[in-house]
Length: 351
Length: 152
Image (cartoon, rainbow over the protein chains, first blue to last red):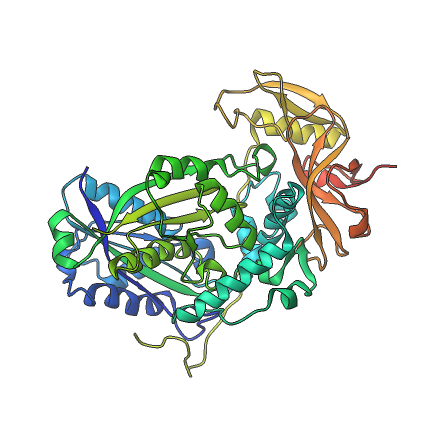
């Protein structure tokens, strides 16, 4: 295996709506920053891979527009996943392992503001037994949350504390969208949105973009003083139907975490893609993270959740802290699909 | 980096209807399930260990083994988890508060997604029994099941 590292990360200022810019205009400053801050000429990028979805852009092959923006002439080697860009990073990592290139760029983006996101997300579901009922994303999460409550091992109070801590941490994150001091007792008094979830249990709806540069071996050492080496990278998926899954033990995340070697050393901090508060509880258990592990110093997806980029942002935030020397070993996760159906785990280390 | 957060220019907009304008075959297993709904029965599929999946699928979600042993199951069952919708969205099946639920029908080993028209959140409880209510007109579609209601 080649040593592959994150050497640069950039993201947009995430916002509820960016009505004045299209996807290309939203993304281009991020692409410029991720290359310029390490002085990387775009001719050195051997492979480009993106994550986005036509269902949010509202047109077929929408990713081609951003590819044109980045510059696809003279011809470049590129690919796209209709997934969170954390999976685009996985594809780029595989490409680097093949040994033909030394530098790859990964990006993800979405503008969710033009549509009604909870309704749009129903279109990703089983088209026969689920989608015709229009079960929105908050309702499906609430089913999983209730199943977790029924185990008696967590509480709505714990979820309010997760929301409060996340949005307080986000005060140090200039790119976060939803930040500030929220008293758990006060927000617990709010009405249910879809019981047992309240508004604070849900992620904000976000327009945003993110990009990462990966590099291998000595190229990584040349581009970064302290690269964030990827020591484990795995993803797994659970069955589609909620009724056949164990909703309170996220098997795909357990398997990915185990295969990525999360428990083979001390974890200093974790960036968990847990868009709903209760999902942080599930993710910590699935990865076996103890009380000593700092969770989501960036504020996590509860502070900004740009669809198709929020998982990549977790890897980027963790890598930035490793590169800055604020920790030696971190885990980042990405999740997608209803009720955490599919999960990716990335273990990062500094030298 | 540049602040992309605002623009003084007028933003053009146009309506866009999300649709999937194709007809699809439901195949031998889901097809049998929907035909059953039209006829007023619920069918599942048996796995090699004897457990029954409802709704049925053409393959075992754990082993990927092909499945084709269709069996009829009951029209009442228990709620394995639920979520109470305080304010229904425009496209939701009911325009008054209701529960989403995963419901394990009698004779089935897995739960199906549907709604419980319970009237009040106070009537909902994990493990409660619910009974299927058929729609007046049935065409071979998941909405042939109008809803479930608390039993008794």
